[in-house]
Structures are given as C-alpha cells and as structure tokens.
Amino acid sequence: MKAVYLIALCTSLLIAVSPAQAQRKEGKKLAHTQNTSRPATQNDAANNGLPPTTMDELAAKEEKTSIFEDPLQGVLVNRTVTVLGNDFYQYFANYWNQTNQESRYSIAIYERPTARFGSEIWIQFRQQRVFHTFLAPARQAAKGVAEAAARIVEQNIMRSELQRMTFIDQDLGPEEF
Image (cartoon, rainbow, N blue to C red):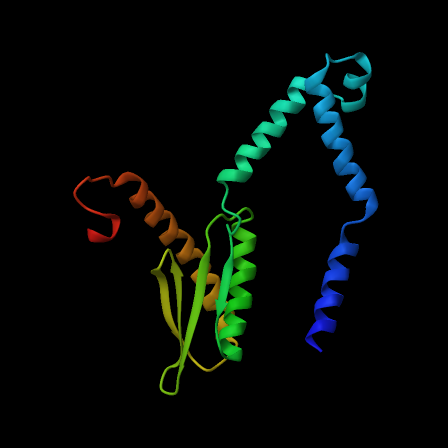
C-alpha cells in the first residue's frame, strides 16, 4: 500500500517539471555560457534587452541574496488548540499581514486553554514573549483583541530588534542582561 503511494508521489513530481520548463532552463544555461565565451553582438542585446554584463551582474546579485536570505522569513506558526484560539490566530494573521506586507519576522502564537480563565494566549518572537493575554470564552471578543495584539506585537518586536542591534558588550551574551 505504501509502495503505491510512493510511486504516485514520484510520478507526480516527475510530471511537475514539464519539458518546456526544462528547455527554458537549458536555454538560460546555454545563453549564459555563450555570453561568457564570446563577445556580445547586437542580436544578444536585442534578445535580452540588456547588455550581457548587466545580465551577469543581475544573476550574481540574485545568487547572493538567495544565499543570505532566510527562507522562513515572515512565518506565522499556529500553536492553538481550540476554536477560540484558532479564531484569534485567523484574525491576528489577517491584521498582521495587512500591516506588515513584507514581514520578515517569524512569530509563533501559543494557546493554553483553562477552565477558569478561558484561553491563555501568548505570542513569541525569538523565544521571547512579546504579547500575553487571557481570552474569555466569548468568541466575539477575539477579533478586537487580535487587532490590538497585532499592534502591540509589532511595537514590541521593533523595540526588541532595536535593543538587539544597539546593545554590544563583549562581556555579556544577549540573554545575560
């Protein structure tokens, strides 16, 4: 049974790369090697729209940014367990994505349901709590709290990042002040 699923997965992955995409990739590789091995002609400039040196520079910049960028930037992790917590997460994610279009901060939203207080919800950034609250069992309150939480989390993250960037001491580690 597992073998059937494995074969289906492999064939779907093979089908995902179409022959046209493979030809385009090979064409780019050939064009790149042609640009480096012979002088540029008018046809090359007309086909690419840019001189070959500019194309090489753009490719080099693209490689540098892909090496140093974190692929998991801007991830919101949902660690809620109840319907109330999931509602809070959905509202928070909507407000967070509206205010931070190109967010590079990864945060996690945790929930611990309690019988006495409703749900305890906290948000962590770099293993530090930047927001903590208790939600009453009434689901309609989650929307307002999530909107306020998005603003508070953004302010606390900015404050934390500013402190992290400006505090430099050879004797203390970042967690020891």
